[in-house]
Every structure is written in C-alpha cells, then in structure tokens.
Length: 513
Ligand SMILES: Nc1nc2c(ncn2[C@@H]2O[C@H](COP(=O)(O)OP(=O)(O)OP(=O)(O)O)[C@@H](O)[C@H]2O)c(=O)[nH]1
Image (cartoon, rainbow, N blue to C red; front, side, top):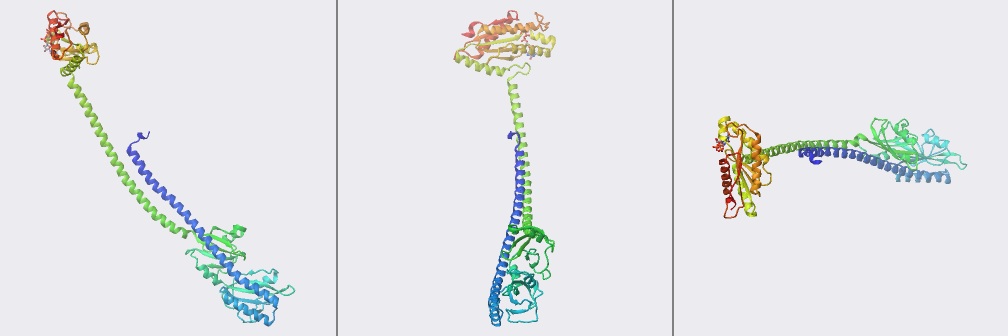
C-alpha cells in the first residue's frame, strides 16, 4: 500500500511534517510557557500577600500588646500622678523598642490627653472627635480597634490608630489608650517587594478604607475602596475564600491586574498584591516573538532545502525512468535483432543459420542418446516456371503460403524445426523420429499443398505441388556427420523429382549406416 506512493511524495510529506512539527511544538511550548508565567505570577502574588499579611499582623500585634498592658496597668493602678508617671516611662520604653510605633497615648473619657509616650501632656489637643474615640465610647468591647488612617495632629505624619477602651472601676467608659503606627513603616516594607513597574500592593480595612498603597499616593490614603471591583469581590468571600486571587481592572488606572488577597489573622484588615498581567507577560511575549522568528526562519530553511532535495530526487527518478526506458528499448531491439538473425524474412521460418545450429545440437544429442534424427527436404515443383508465368512476387506469395502450411503441420516437439534451406527449398528437422514418422509428416504437407489448388499453368499438374525427400540417421560418434543426413534427404528429393514430382521419396538405408 505504501509502495503506491513515490519517494518524492514521502520526501515531501517528511519535509512538511518536520516543518509543521516545528511550528506546532513551538506553539505548544509558547502556550505552556504562557500558562507557566501566569502560574508563576499567581505564586509570586500569593507569596507577597502572605508576607505582607504576616508583617502587618505582627506589627499591629506588637503595638496591641503594649496597649493591652497599659490598659491593665491603668485599670489596676488607677490614674494617680505616680501611676501615670510609671505608665509614661513604660510607654516611652515601648516606643523606643518598636520602630513602627509613633506614639502611645492615653485619653480620659472626654478625649483629653492624660499621658503619652513623649511625656508632653498638652491640653491643647482633644481627640474626642476622632473615629476611634467615638467607637470606644459607643462600644463596650474590650478588643483592639484599628481605625482609619489619619494625619497625626502632633507629628503631621500619616498614622494608623490602634486603640483599646479604658474602663472605670464600675465598667463605664473611662477613656481610650491609643497606639499610632507609622504608615511609613509599612510602606518601607512594601517597597522591598518587586511587583513590577505597573504592580501595586495595598493594605485595606475590612470596611473598605485604603490604609496604604504602594506606589504611595497621599491623596488616596484613607479613601474608600467600596466601589472598586476588588473590594466588592473580597467582601463577597468568606472563610478560606478570602485567601485567593482574581483578575480585576484597577478602579484607579484601569490596568488589568491579578490581585492576590489575604486577610490579617487577628485584625479586620486585608492585604492585596496586584501584578500587572501585561507586564508579567511582556517577557514571555518578547521571548515568544524572538523564538517564533527563529522557528519560522528554520522552517523556511528546511522547507527551501527540502524542496530542492525533493526536486533533486524527482530529477533522479526521471533520469532513472529514462534509463529504464532506454534499457527496455535496447533489450527489445536486441530481441528483435536476435529473432531477425535467426529467422527468414520472407517466410517467417527459421533461417539456414538457425537450422545449422539446431542441426548440430540435435545431432550431438542423438549421438549421445543413440536416437534417430529425421530430415525432410522439400522443394516446390516447377517453381522457375511459376516465377516466369506469374512473376517473382507471386512466387514469393506461394513460398509464404507453403511455409505457413509447413509451420502448421510440423510437429511442435522440442527440437522440431522447419527452416528455409535456400531458394525455394525448405528443410524440416525432426529429432527422435523414424523414417515412417517423417514420411507421414512430409506426405501430410505435400497433400495439404496440393489441396490448396493454387493455379500453376506451367506445371503438368495445373496447380502448385511440391516434392520431398526424407532421410533418417542414428548417428555414431566418429562415423557420421550432420551434413550426411541433409545430403541423403537431398538425394531422396532428387529421386522424387526424377520420378515425376508431387511425391515423397525415402532415402536409401545408407544414411542410417
Ligand atoms: N519468387 C521466388 N523465386 C525464387 C526464390 N528463391 C529461388 N527462386 C527461384 O526458384 C527457381 C528454382 O528453379 P529450379 O531450381 O531450376 O527448379 P524448378 O523450376 O522448381 O524445377 P524443379 O525443381 O525441377 O521442379 C529459380 O528460378 C529461382 O529463381 C524466392 O525467394 N522467390
């Protein structure tokens, strides 16, 4: 089945498959590399979000621990001057120890400064209007409260307030203990992450207030993110669903980013690391483009040289086909020449040369096997007259007709051969045939020619006839030669002629001696 197709077909298929495979493999590789790049981006985002959440949690926790301590001390030791002085020292030490802390503050139930880490108790400031103060005054919970970022009234810095409620002995609202965390502390940490030129990280409160964004934008700190796709998506999640990632268009700059988000473990905040999809895929795109050019050039080269190879193969095939054709023509010409060399052109019988060769072979065989070889010599009667009366070509026709009959009536055993002996004489060689057998063959031919009734006005019979002399020999080595058989048949023919023609005469026994 495969042989039905030529080598050029398979060469073309091979070159095409190689080119196509190159392209398909490259496309497959590129698609894989793209999804690998996106996975890598997701992993990077998740890792950044985890680190950010952990850092924020630890940072707030450290401050909150100080707050819990101060609350316990004040509630236990009271608000006397000495007690407050001790608390102040403790607060100063905490602020010195924790770099994220800008200050620690204690306010009474009216928002007035009782004590702070700086030791300045200015009555100029009243913080009763602050969100965290109002929150604790109106909520009895004792847990920490993370407020919206504000600009510190004392330092002018962006701070994140973390506070706890102070109770009086009867459980009523006794004030607020506040820790202010330096937003810049977070920012410095966030700057250490490489999220690309178009990436961003943010710390957001669960209520949708932006605590901090890197790249930093002072105008957006404290702003609401409630309308952003990111916040709406995050707010819909719960439990483990809040740790994950999603692709959003930024509400800020419209950039398509993969946002990895994660809540803080102990505080109502979450972080998000947003990586620009375009930026992350830029290197992949560049690599893909460069490699694709390489693959296309390679495929084109293979295609070009493959095409040349195929045409070379085609040319070779053509040359081979031409050679085969020439060889076949030569062989056929040789066969024709061979046949012509052994055949008589007029009668189609074997020629004298072939008769001599066959005679020699059969004579040797008969000598070896001790078998009898018969030979019939046939001659058309009054043929000279026929030529004279009807013309030479009519004479040729007679020879053809007689030969045709002889061919049809001569036995077809191997070694039997009828040949034009010369002129209008035809000889028939019959190996392994005795005198009677050969005579029967000769007689059959004579009668058949007579029956043709070909008009011959020059003949005493009125139509074409023939005479035949038959001889046989059982040759013995060193005694007999092939020509003896022919001569004996010729003599018998002579007898047939002299006895009146149109007859078959048998040779005397001398050829068999
Ligand atoms: N048309 C034709 N004539 C041939 C050919 N070969 C020999 N002959 C003629 O055959 C004739 C033979 O004549 P002869 O051998 O004298 O004998 P004949 O006329 O046949 O008389 P008998 O044999 O005695 O009956 C000659 O005239 C040859 O020219 C041939 O190929 N074609």
